[in-house]
Amino acid sequence: MSETPSKFESKTRALGGTEQNWFKAVAGGTGITALALQISNEPNISLFKKSLEKIQNDHPSLNSMLHKNTSNGSPCFIINPPIPSIRLTIVTESETSELLRTLMSHGSNESVSPLHLILEHELNTNEWSDTTGRSLCMGGVPLWYANAYTLPDHKWALVFRLHAGICDRTTAVSLLKELKEAMREKEGGYKEKGNMGIEELIPSGKAKKTLWSHGKDMMAYSLNSVRFTNLKFKDVKSPRRSEVVRLKMNTQETHMLLTGCKVRGIKLCGVLAAATLLAAYSSKRNSSNNHRRKYGVIFLNDCRSYLQPSLSIHEFGTHLLVMHTFEVVHNV
Image 1 (cartoon, rainbow, N blue to C red):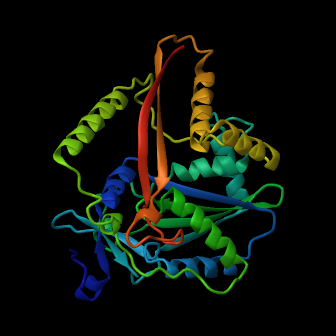
Image 2 (cartoon, helix red, strand yellow):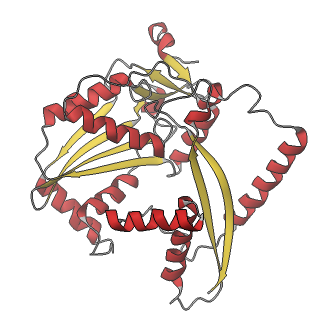
């Protein structure tokens, strides 16, 4: 499985199928999880480091490095590596200010907050783009990074950047909750019992499909792939980057939304998907280009409770299930 010395053989694990897919996707810029937490009190760096170490020790996936076998090219996780896998960087106020000026010069909206700009910056920083790098084949590369930024107006931002192979969208929420508890120096923890790929936890028989069902799925996947790979880009030469659209609602607005969904029998995910489509449509309605436009919506569901044995929200890894993918076309 690995070319590392024999003393590390018992501490390696081959990537599961889903993790393999993320390994390939992250190299191209997709599949990076970024978490940003803004605080108004100066962080206790020693406590912050201690909290990160505690969370890392509680979760084998976070205490891992990504390694690639040079003989067959297959990747694996090195669990409990000889060197700590977390990388914590303290960014001073002057360094943060210079970074923000650079980000603003790229044409970012001036109304976007510093936290928002830093989150997008982290999302577009990819240490895993070179999957053939020497460090990946030798000692391995870290799977998550932590940065503490000093913002203007006596504020600070704690930001995490993680490989989606060890931390998906739902896991990120659990990570944030555990960090808050650890920073309050609460006792206890959520020690994981094991570290396996999601495929090993699917209930017996659930992963198998009849030949007819499998054929229909393959046809649907192929059609969806053709739809989205044929999208036309006006600018195909400039570097690609990810941006974040943030929706912020107060308590009253949230209550009104949930009440409206309940009264009308509409699921919250449907309302949010519709709102996203309307926002995308609205942003392009003043465009001089009157061609048809395509929008794709993907629903994700946390499937940890459906696995066997079922997993709690504190079991880290990749446990998102794609539920639906469909296309909406508008004539602008």
